[in-house]
Length: 533
Image (cartoon, rainbow, N blue to C red; front, top):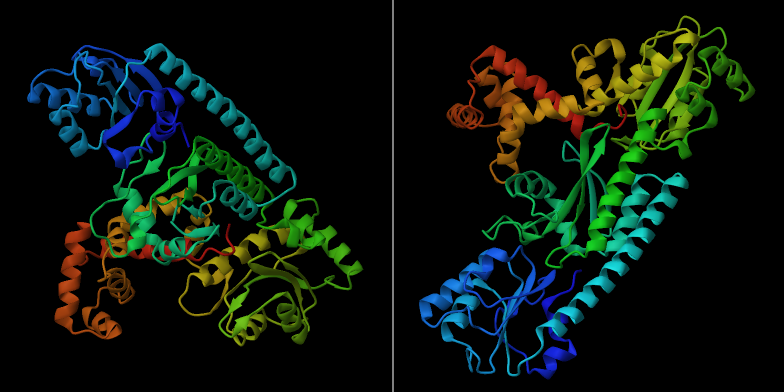
């Protein structure tokens, strides 16, 4: 935190002069950036913000209107505090017009019983400012080194987020461009409330309110859905390859962030970008958990043929077999489906496999038994009610391509409402959407098509996205859509009219429905992208 008015008034020189606060008690936490002295009525035009303005009162004016005008100008110039000598040169008591106008605006006004040398005040305050800046530079150097050490140690974005929370003492949230939370550290009950309605905080309040120069975002004083919606927040973009990948938030509430806290936020956002860049370069999300063999295949350090040869040393004979890649999410409908579960499933159908834990999903390179179709694996995984993707049957040389095919198919399966197993050849147009989901293009398309609807749903109890989804999935058949939603047809008509007005489209137009259906499918992919990163 910067040098506050309260800290300045605690200086011996002000205590000696009998400083008394006449107005603006609620804003004594404001930061003093500089000291300025002046005795002219239009002194405000020489201020740039954050000043402690010292005056003997000669420029304040003699009439009530002049005094109020003077205060309004000082406030408009964003001065931190007005300090007036009341030793008789201009005033012996603080004018009522000054006190009333300053209190109305919230401008702190301080009166001094004794005359003091303004030069001595400037010297003492500026000495404090210099000392504080030196300390800030020292703190910034330590912060930068701390995040650099984490990067050198190979830590991921979760560790960086936790370090930022520890340093600033406030909850931290990392989200991507589709407003999906990827990390949450330093949790508090108040922050938990915000997390319960994150879409409101991120989509509605952040999108509607501009950032202040220092990165703070004052949220609206109007009544929102929950008290948590009033939490103040500072955020910084995570920029990856010149594009905004997501945002790093500090939920600081009513507390003001120090300069070192904002610096830590900047350093953390840059460090997260470096970590994400590394993860994309190697094609993996958590290299620590990958087996060495699969990791080398994904790095390109091994060819497909070399992979098969080295797999034999692990007791997995993939030679002379038709190979495919399987990617399975760990969260099955009947509980966790982990690495061992996938190994046993493949072993049960006679398919040797190299299986690796990839963090939030499991990847296997499997060899099909002779004359066995890939449908056998689909049926076996369907029995476990998991979300999974399966590549085409390939030769060893094409293993790297098969890895990406399986991950794309798994991402499409994850976007479905119910557990399902998809083969790459079954994806159709989803192949394009999954590919786009790996960059910012799909998120941008979804925001362009559905952004106004998502913002409406984030701030309204009557969500319209389910109605749009049902209507599109029924290809514009109103009777089927009403039945799927369990509503009367006139209720559906009313909702469709609201959608038309809100989105500025006609849902009767087949081209519009086709466009929006792609956006809804893309939204599903962005909200559950566990394998296609």
